[in-house]
Length: 370
Image 1 (tube, helix red, strand yellow):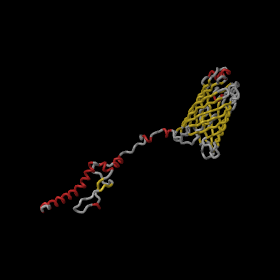
Image 2: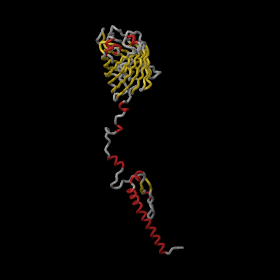
Image 3: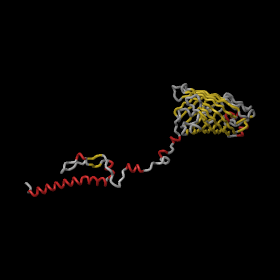
């Protein structure tokens, strides 16, 4: 049924009024929403009116969602502004830049450059001290290694435990303790069946110049000193030694030639130690320091990475008429499983020890570190 003329005019007027209200109130409602819910709308989308999408006069405008480009309302701050106004973190207090285990012990040196562990605790071969610095720390950090060694001879056994710490690939500090057991030979020597000699050795070594892996022919050169203390002065004096305490000083030069796989070490030591100090220092024959030679040759086969085979030789002083000493010799094979594990086995010939000749046998050592 058709509306009366007056009603049709009123309806048309109400439609125009509603359209005008939508046109005016749409942007206003969007602004109110931005003020009431700023973060979700900023993080996701905002309502903007695309100029090209405006409806013709008298129509309803189209509202589209677009990334936020609108400026925040007065008094509000954006996350970016807040972050920009925050002061930068102090590197000294940032936990991410503090000291960590990986920074203190970075382990950046090449496999094998820490050397093996000697009977006296310093890094080197089994019976010779090398110019190497223990552990795998670079010039900016430290390194450390621990070892256990066992020697079984014809009439004696020796166990050795120790640790070494390297500082900045420059300084090494070492400690070792030897348990030298006489077994049934102790009764024959008159000192008691199974008597044990205990020897503590503390050492320090300083690299002067060069590096074992330098491309030049210049070797790594280091000087070192050891202080040794034998645990039973009564027995030490009874076997003819002058002192239960003594010190060694030495200078060592070590060089690795990787192209031919050759390791060379020469060391000169001043010592008065009888059997490296196990039987004390000095004697009725001599109580002065005389230089002794230590040398090592090692071969690194390219077809077995991590393996070193070689020989060592060490001269000994003759301080006592009671028991002449013999020079030492060994043939060894050492395998570096990785920087944390090294296994060494050797045949050793130590000559005469406390009147008993032909002291030969096996040497085994385990070393772990970082």
